[in-house]
Length: 103
Image (cartoon, one colour):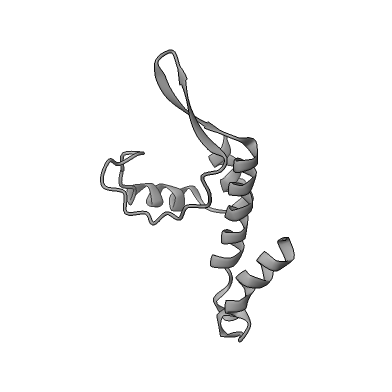
């Protein structure tokens, strides 16, 4: 139903949709391999482990999740900024300004 609505609203012909499916390559949803993601530690204040039925469980305080969401929104707003702003002389000062404003 969703694909039919997409075709109706976007004025895309069924031939164009069929041809796009011909180029489809299947990939496993969660490929296993080494994680090359660079992480940064925000804090360890809101994280602990507890024992439940002999298993160690991660416990995260809701304040820690709020901090994580706040940092994520900041990173998205800054790192996905339009490239034209990179020519601005104040572009690299923005993180410091936003941190100052937030505190």
